[in-house]
Image 1: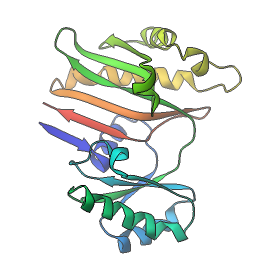
Image 2: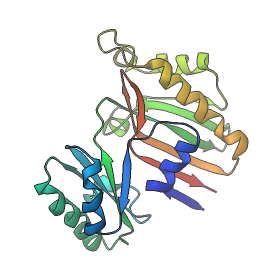
Image 3: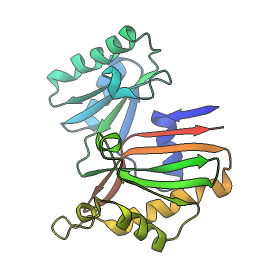
Amino acid sequence: MKILIGKEANEFLEKLNLNVAYYETARNLEEATKKLSRFSFPMVLKLISKDALHKTEIGGVKVVKTKEGFEEAFENLREAAKIGKIKFEEVLLQEFVEGLELIVGLKKDTTFGHVVMLGLGGIYVEALHDVSFRVCPINEKDASEMINDLKAKEVILSKRKKFDVERLKKVLVKLSKIPQKMKDIAELDINPLMLSEEGTKAVDVRIIFD
């Protein structure tokens, strides 16, 4: 089994021409500080370790609002790794992205083969179970039906917010075609994928290969 997280997972999506939230990586505080000027506040710091695939559960995600809080947040991530007995690999420095949190991805189902998934992301995934699936590959009509399957469709299709729904459809179609070339992909989760009026940006990605 092979797992891609952090930079590796982001690069996987970038090769597919999918938008990823701007990021840098750093193995220590000195390296991170040198890259700080490339970001504005607020920004996000994330602990990257294959021992911690669910970062929020161990305090592995920090929103940093000021330059003064940056060093403390970085050291807190190092401490979280130590307390959780997790290998500290690196820290992902990431732009803070606003929008509607969605989850999109792929799963290898024992009955249907690969399926593409869409639902409300972030904390709402487990709380609401508002998720739609289709067998891969799909077209944009299928993607539209996936959106309409959701209880949250009124939010996504809101006339007031005018989210870039066309871009979301294209993301779903592109993801659904991955298994045609990579049959060994077992799981791909983008949670959250931020949907805004400007388009979509992947904020957190995990990919598992058989």
